[in-house]
Length: 259
Image 1 (cartoon, rainbow, N blue to C red):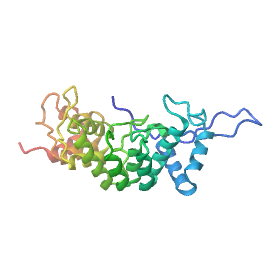
Image 2 (cartoon, one colour; image 1 turned 180 degrees about the vertical axis):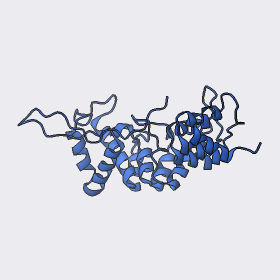
Image 3 (tube, rainbow, N blue to C red; image 1 turned 135 degrees about the vertical axis):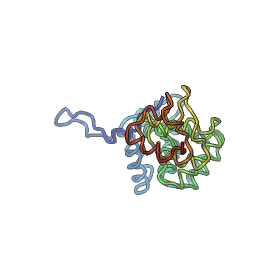
Image 4 (spheres, rainbow, N blue to C red; image 1 turned 60 degrees about the vertical axis):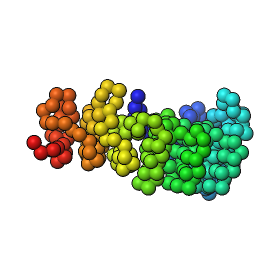
């Protein structure tokens, strides 16, 4: 199931009951909120972030009330995420050496260290994390984001796309279909540049181009067509042509083989 990508509410405050009510506290469920915390970490250190998270509720404020994880483990995981976002390779290496879980997602709506490094384009940290046994590029946030969809630039995106293709076991099919469904054209271009087959299909036999067309993701359709996606012959029942509006038909005609 493909989820809508949304950064989510960033700084939600609880309702105020009047004078003497607790001060508003931020909620850290969104990607942009994680950006704010990485910036705070760079300026004032991890302790400032950990104190902010503790004040906002959640496992840290509850004494580490997370299944099987002590407060110390949670703090280490949060520090690994923040260091990955800052590009602090020395701290990342030290935390991994100390046994910190490479796929941990202690807060930030499910963002992992790989997602943080991708988000901020830290290639050295990305390579370090990817070298760890069990490092996964298939994790998703609470809003369906992945390390690949969070990449900040084409260089980072291509590195992650190549790594995903090498590790996925499905030839990049899942990532291609998700990007087509959600209209992530830049992600599609990176996957296709990494040699993912543009004609891979979902479990219902619908190729990525048709998946994108059904969601009216025109830029995604053009990215797939430019990299060799086959639209089939015009007029073919069940093909992308049968679902094309005037704008998509114009794009299809640019790439269709001469009849």
